[in-house]
Length: 592
Image 1 (tube, rainbow, N blue to C red):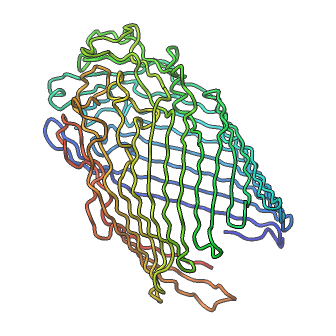
Image 2: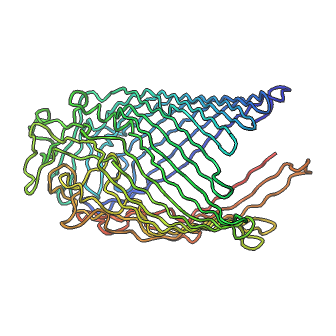
Image 3: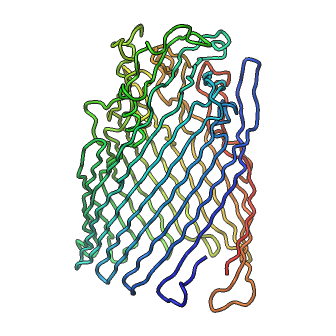
């Protein structure tokens, strides 16, 4: 709902309210000692969003608006489904309040915009029951979820961007406090402990390969500070050549480092018609260290939250092992840690084959440098993996920036009309991305040989095809969405902790990471919409109703999402997750 405040022509309001309730279901497909376990679990989600905006127009060149918004989410039985039984699920709740102020002043040559953002949020995850968690690797998970967490955030953001048209130059500059926040994290998880079994046979024999448990104070406050700025000059070298040169500076307090990185872009339109445009660019982009990982580092410093790892424990209890006598696990930064960054560059050509219709070809490349990953630097050493180098400590997780990534892609696209009735976009991408890390929480299968992790990225897909368009049928419109892609990779594992590092992610000898592929897929979505005028029109627009029917996965094709790669699992080699089946959606909208 929107409109003026009173009779004012310069002050308006906007109110929005959105309520969504989704009665979702998760499907348990697991295997226990007595055979197959199948169940449907209700996992409902409820979301409420409200916003109120007040806009003041001080003149044609000056606009100020303020907005308050809230979001409230509740999710039940999260985590249930797949191998996880309903009793090992958890409930999630989240609430957020936002206040935004936006001031924009514009003239024919100068534009300045200031954005202030204030945010308060808190969230919690609560296990359905406090029982000890039982994980039988890639077979079933039962007991309690052991996932209890609490967190809060008070956040302030500031963005000020300035543009100035000076002759042939467009100068842009800006400063920002992208993150200026106080957060608290309270890790209450795994207080009841978790037993890990490598297979159903080891579970039936009461032979877990590991037991983990946490004790102590998991509450830590932290302050996150990310500030920076940029400057850029876009100018015409000639009538056919434009160039943009700029630099960006970012500082983050977690790493206590700041970096200035350059960016250059150019465009060239040969000939007088300018129907063909050649573009190229290169830039460096800094990555940000995730605050939850820094909180984990503060919690596991040896004096706050104590985490224990016991290999080959007694079951169902530790049988006098003496948990408190076990060495502590630690989390720390590697001495050489630095700010992760990515080098991205591209060049391509765009050809206007007809008015409103273009075809293009673009090569894009990215090189990830000093990417985040984790490694247990106190893992047992080969070839016998009999003991940790420092027996007074358990797992010593060192967060390091030693990961790399290489990505190359060729993109061909068409945008425009075919005939009088079809208008859309078609895009084909041939790509390859390889790396040796999947992020800050990634551990190598062999902590002593992280170089062995080089292989296809988890999201690598060689071929991708997307077609989006509409067909004008005069009395209604037909929407078409076609996407097809080759399969993503997955890894073959033994499911056994042969190197005694507490992870059952070991691979067979000579097998690399992500060497297998799930099948590719093709999906077709269709929609029909009809616009119906309601009553006489006033001017150009009048009240109307829009009715529509949409069919997702119209062919009801089976699309594998995940294949089990654990040789010890009863589901080895089988699909264990799929993309959604055919869904039908009816919609109606009235505008007035």
